[in-house]
Length: 538
Image (cartoon, rainbow, N blue to C red; front, side, top):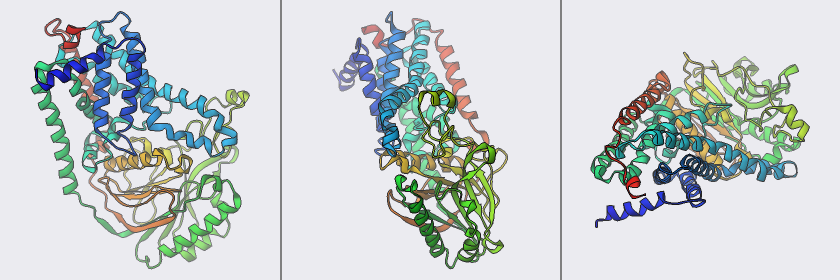
């Protein structure tokens, strides 16, 4: 008996688990999948966990209550996946612990359970298809590939959408593995990676086809690696001679941002750092980037334009997060652009954040929650901020840019208006809400994904970190660690030719789904030809 046969027989036992044991193991596999994201970025965990889920579901196909078992197994997997990968969200409730800490054991489990429903529904749909149609053993997991991919797309779009820790984000530990995003985007690449992750389970189900499936695994892995290495080699980081960026990281604790005196001290430090870092940069456009809500109502400081005119280079601009009054509509989380300095340093334009964080910046069904005594975490209270009209490109100096405020860089298809393309992406964020846990590291990985997908350099100023400048191939060319005040001063990287994904959007992903569905429909006609080893031994 060879090692493969021994391993296969051991894995077959997973499918025979009954009762509470099946969802418990599913919970463990979901937790394991979370290790593929920051801070560990252990990509093999994704392969092990997705194949583990597939084997657990396979054991429900021939059971009378298989659909119920599949739903709760998928739900447990999703709960473990999001609990471990997003537990850092608890830090946001601890900033004002006297008001919000009590919500942690109520809100977060409900939130993670809700997100886990996407895995639950994908698992249920897969088993329903398998119960209705007999599939050959080597194609038995094609329905799961389809349903998991659909569920991930839905998670990123329905209601407000939350495309955080998508499957493709598991590749962020390697610049080489990130590169297919330029062609496939996060959902198309997610489909490919899910296919890759399900192949080990397919080998267990169809040992007679292990060589062919192994060749497929090796072929996909080789193609991804070769493409990534070649793309990085062909696109070394290059820098412009007409545009410079200064990224300021003030490192102000979230509690201190609620103190007016400490906010003012931070403002003065930001101005001083900006002046010092821009000395001698007079023959180019200079963009000074401050973080999200660096100072509220910054546009109402009467002597700020004069100060900027004195301290910044002639063609210098200040780009800063702030809060501004939106008149009768309340307040907006905004990005203000002042400059150029040689024109008086006045306010040039304002961009209002249009994708607001639910319960953090906006409170859905505010009247209901107000009656229940549940407040929003928004600093302006009430129903939260007023959303802006949508993405835009700001023309300022030699390098027009697309402004993104914090959470907005999570959404791959709404970074700037269709039909336009900026020279770079300017991200202002305040991840101080999330402490030194995995959240800020995952957010940086997401920024790298957006750079690869758009072929644009990205500069991000994060209040307490991680601030960075990222080149258009996703390389972090300069960074400031968490909880360290400082700045990054450097020439702006040159953008690349518009990537395929930016041109086509999710069309390739749709194409993969069509092929996937066609294969399922084709293989379902081969009834009874070859049943999986799980079915034969159950």
